[in-house]
Length: 192
Image (cartoon, rainbow, N blue to C red; front, side, top):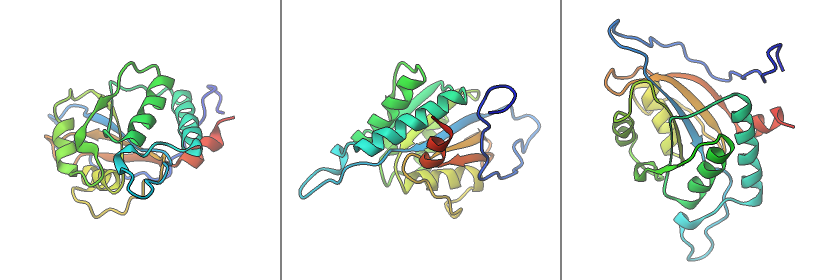
């Protein structure tokens, strides 16, 4: 802990990017991307959509939620894929942070389109702080699109990982800055 009593925020990846390409652009949306926790196998004939978190998945997400609370993170909106494992993940985090509701966004399903997610984000105020809970490969493609303008950045979102993208604006183009990315294991290591 630092002198202020807070756990220092580890910075694993930090891109310096021109956050305000036009002096007339105001501060933009901060987006947090979180991949769902470890989930059970679908089994023979089982539904991928119905896969739930395993016991280990629950433990990792609870530790991640405690870490997020210790960092004093708060969100104007928590949205999750309709798949069970993402809904469970979002529910655990929302409850730990005192968030009353979780919205379901169909655009966050596996194989979703990053541009469609960006359009959906564009409906919210420029000052919003949004947590999106979803799946791979969508989340790493979305992070890449937000910071690099394409899907070519090699960003790995492991199960339970969280990434913060600062100052994203759909209207201003590629303005996001990958501020940090932390794995579930790293978050758990910071929590008792």
